[in-house]
Length: 143
Image (cartoon, rainbow, N blue to C red):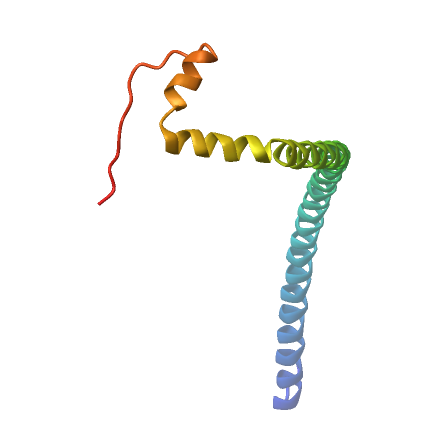
């Protein structure tokens, strides 16, 4: 048997250490591969859940959009109806104003006569003549 030189022993030590490092690296690669497979499965699961959630969200958005559109149409119709009603009311008020102006113009003299009769104190008598029941009279004196 030959005696091994220190350089050969050192080389054998390096070879053994390298073999140990290779085994450790292979184990790490195996662990990393298993971890990668687990991560891939989780990503697929989350992706499927996200896709399902997105479809549900899209479905809800479409439903809400349709409801909103229908509501907007109803609101638009209500506004149109209200506008038409307002026009009719405005026209009726104009006609009423015209009639009231005519009535005031036509009865202007009667109002004057009523005022005169009030001053003369014959209002109660006039009301009774017209068939209006008078239950009492309040007199106010001015200083």
